[in-house]
Image (cartoon, rainbow, N blue to C red; front, side, top):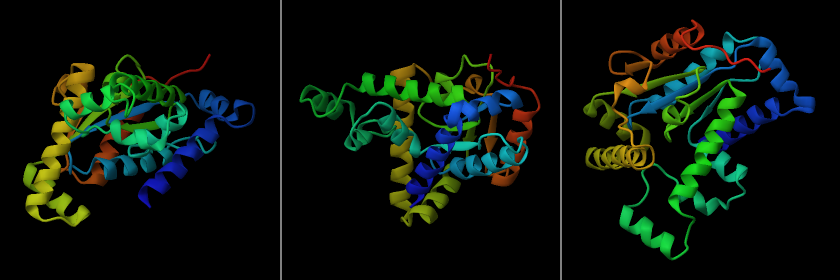
Length: 242
């Protein structure tokens, strides 16, 4: 259900920007408020909740005729598959916590899916296309690195202590402590491997981000407010279409 809702929002966002005669693009240009936020996160840190609250915060402070602030997280893969006319089954091979290097290489050799570098390049193109539209919050998949050259992109990382993350994952995914810890370790390792392999980057490098927030110390609502104020303050420059 969550994925379905995310796809509906994504389609609404794209339709707004690509509406009749480029109406959405004109409105965005006129408002001069086209910005991008990227969020890097640890599993179980609450980044998705922060992203959703941030979208609401920014939308409430945007011109009424502006295209909606939209979160691209789980639905980012769906957008990439759609944009590049790829079958749905390919989605499992672009996950940040995907299979081992050996299994992935064997599957490429057997022709079970396109080369991983091709899939990552296509994902990078999709991220840049969304960033060009503006008013997007991009969660994960190296978005902070992909958009690092854009002076209107604001980059942040959401972190939390391991025990707090275990408790959140247990609650959200209805798992025991041992299973929740295994999920966290698998996904965190996968995300680190993804960034190191394809972008030669360490996700824990603080120099990648404008801001880092610990959700053990700051509520999701307060985190959204802090980020939103920083984004709107002029730290990053609004994109102007000419």
